[in-house]
Amino acid sequence: MSRLGTAALITLFTLSVPGSALAQSVGDDQYRDPFAGQDDGGQQDGTAAPAPAPAPTPAPAPAPAPTTSTPATDPATGEPIATVAGTLPRTGGEAAWVAAAGVLLIAAGAWLRRTARA
Image (tube, rainbow, N blue to C red; front, side):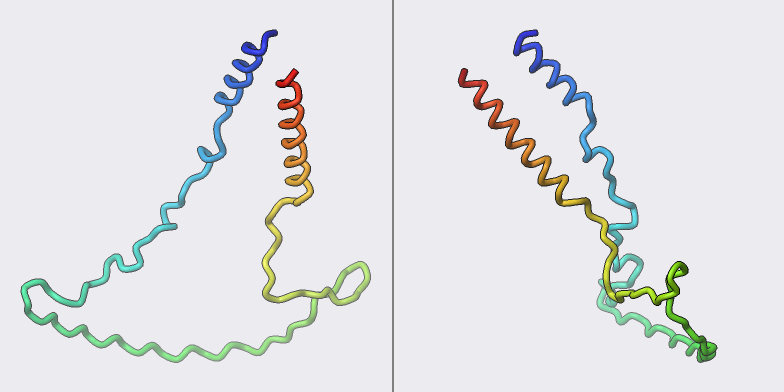
């Protein structure tokens, strides 16, 4: 197969695969107007706005019942499990896969450049 035919097949394959941006969408509630439904505080004709009625005071909430907490233990060994407060779960991928893909792309580019000279 000629180089032109190979390039055409690769181009057609690339264009037939949807891009990752097509799968992304913005949630409807992500960009909400925080001031929606609030009065602007003044009127356009220069007259004063009526004073709002005072809100009723809520009844005090009952005190929570005292609870005792026991530290989490490993069922296999019975030892306490160490917990770290304030840390986020790891959601990223492995850096080794990204590095391997980068090395592969650099090697492919070097191979392509070398074969194009010949």
